[in-house]
Length: 132
Image 1 (tube, rainbow, N blue to C red):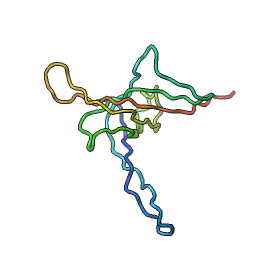
Image 2: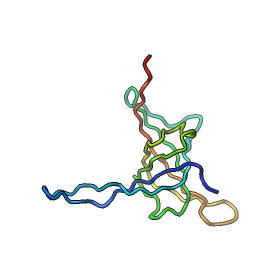
Image 3: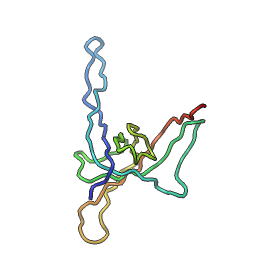
Image 4: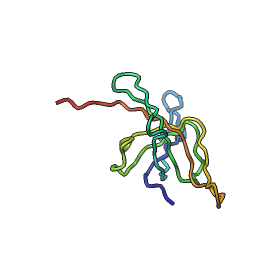
């Protein structure tokens, strides 16, 4: 089984030192492409918080294929890469951040090989309404 959505893990790259000041700066992120599926945790009552007008935060569940090099960690940032027709929860190129510890899920009966990794993620967006 392969999950249908393309996601990219954005891991912090190696730090570089600014030659003029000597300060350390974050390097470009390392991009690791992977497969997953984003779902609402509770369909009848999704956890959505609105802090200001147009600023919404959602908690969702990201299911990922097992076997990711380095595993999935707390505070990992994932970017949604498509396909665009399934982007009803997040838009293409939006990012989500892992909240808490991701869990490996196995089938209840049969193989003990991991079926998928479940991670609770947080998605924040600035919604803009179209003006006529």
